[in-house]
Amino acid sequence: MKIVVFLDVRSEALCTAVASEAATVGDSVELVHCHNSVVQVLRRKNKQQETVNTFICLITEKGSLKDAGVVYALFRRRIAVLSLEEGSIASPSIPLLETISSLHVDLSGGLLQAQLLAVKAFFSFNATVSQVIVFEGGDGVGKATQTRLLVNRLVDEGHRVSSIEFPSERNRYGELLREVLSGKKGGIQDLDPKLFSLLFSMNRFAFLPELQYWMCRGTKIVLDRYYTANCGHQASKFPEEERAGFIGHLQLMEVSWLRLPPANLVLYLDLPPHAAFSAMKADPNRGSLDIHETAQRAYKENVRKTYLWCCENMSNWFHTNCCDCAGSRLSREETHNKVYEMIERQIIPIE
Image 1 (cartoon, rainbow, N blue to C red):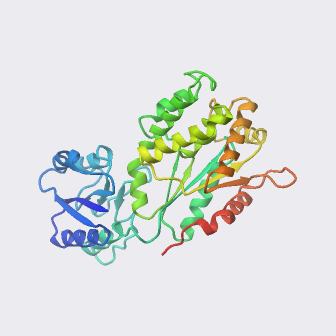
Image 2 (cartoon, rainbow, N blue to C red):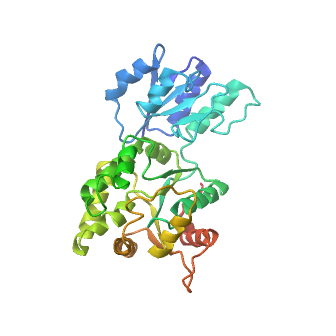
Image 3 (cartoon, rainbow, N blue to C red):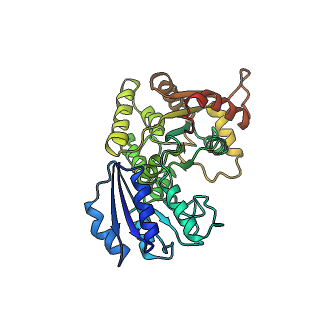
């Protein structure tokens, strides 16, 4: 992997530390000094950097979210930023921004020592091995809850963990997706599944910088839905004999073309549609239901059937029945324990 570091740093000790630490994880390292304007340097180098197998970042000694260079790097160039300014605070809503505090560095040894330790932590890519773990299932089965419980458990075990819920409204495609899902563009049978799946793909593609950053940092990425959701929802709209081909095209599009990291473990939470719908109606935190959530039972059964086909025919898919033998729904803790027992040996341990 090639490492490209844009350096907005004056301290020779920090420059030396960056070069040294970057060399421990990169096959080659390029340091680009931003002595005048960070924005101008980033803009000038914008079209010259390869993104495949390349980690690009900005390390700034004084910059924060108040500075144009940091904002440009995060939101225009979409590259990781390490701010070494004392008191700079990271935000969960900006996962590409790291600070001394977000890297859990102690300031008791003085600012320079903390900055040196933060640089070391920033380039600590190999503490664990990255994996993408996905929760799938029909609406109302508890994907968000199980995502949160697994994230908390992995954090308690010492893993570096990040998470996203898809589709996300935090990018340019989110608002359009929400409009489509509200039914303003037609009912569920009126929407071309190929076009609909492409819209979801673009929503995920907008998070490629974050996903790539987490992957190279050895993060366990736990997702509430992923491209695997199209395998259940959109593929179910095709005749049975055409579904496998469509699923193959979905994976080609998102993994091979868009270069989204492949899902390593997919957990299908299986709950009868009538039980899931009752849970959605009883959820005080859920807003108005979308066209998938209010779809006819026949459609939801078809989605369930397609997901079950994926569990039987695709590698690393796990079927999780969310009911007991008597048909009663398991508690969220019981479901979590069941999930964890299924994948515990599949989770790559911390090195």
